[in-house]
Length: 451
Image (cartoon, rainbow, N blue to C red; front, side, top):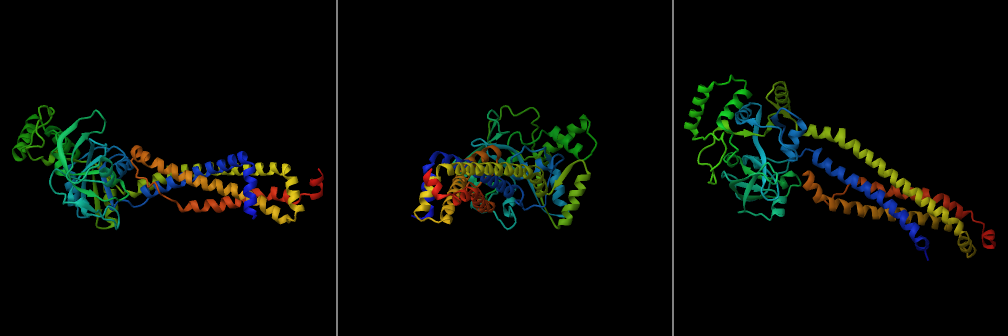
């Protein structure tokens, strides 16, 4: 019978005490694994370059909120920008690519975020050296839509599916009459694109209520660009001119009586708004100059999408992770002390058993090794159980986190830092086993057998 077998039989003889001490180690390791894995997922999601644009331009406000809403779709948009401002950005000589983004609606089924954009959005790498792969046809008709892999899977949608948009996202909000047709399925990217529905920007503007009432649009644009306001006569003339040119209607009084699926007119540019603008610039210096210029003005802001997320991870998430790791390390340490107490207390009851082993020819070093093996079995066994429980909890929590926070979680994620756990547990087991082992090593055979 080898040492490990003897040690295992000894552990089983103290079944309840052994189980409780091993479970306490398992719980500590489970919490540590969960902290490491979840932090790793957040770091991969937020701290790496997950967007292939130099700047996100949006209304003045929180840079973090702008990035969260535009890139991750987990925060409401700040405000909107006039379409004319997007056109100005597009003409800026420092800009090579300008892609408008319009948000605010969700799918009627599943509450997935709706993003209105241009077909060019899918021809640009969504992250460095990572291209969109699409199953379906070109995204070019006004009421075309592409859906992410998670949307397709959960809603059981495919090419040809008709979908409707719900305004705002609350259950009681208005469902728009207009229908979009799915013409393409985006293959899985492991990013927020997987849980997003993209619709053609032209169709987005043709939805009732998405074109701003003419009088409001004119006031808003003139105020935004610092132009003097119009009096009533000038406003009426301007509205009449726009209606004549674009066939635009003034929806200032709502949309009652609307009983057709699509607009029967072209949306005037002045009635269009964008939530944000994605920019690629000719050089990094050009991007910084443009960002600085926007910062000085009162109209909009330009944000490097990486910086707010790095700040979030450094100032908030990082310290929380460190605190949780310290707490879980303390739990594992307390569990180790419990194992030490359990084994050490058992030594008094086992003195006769050890003496018999010695009398039968077992060497002192063999007895010492058996006690160390018991400590290692409890620590490593508890660690393995904790590893399985930790990843099991992440697997169970993944879909809940995705629904609640909108963050894509890989349920099979593994962090290399987890590999350090078992050498540490082995070292702890050896330290725990030394004193009880020395007690066993020094057992007086004659005294123990005569007592």
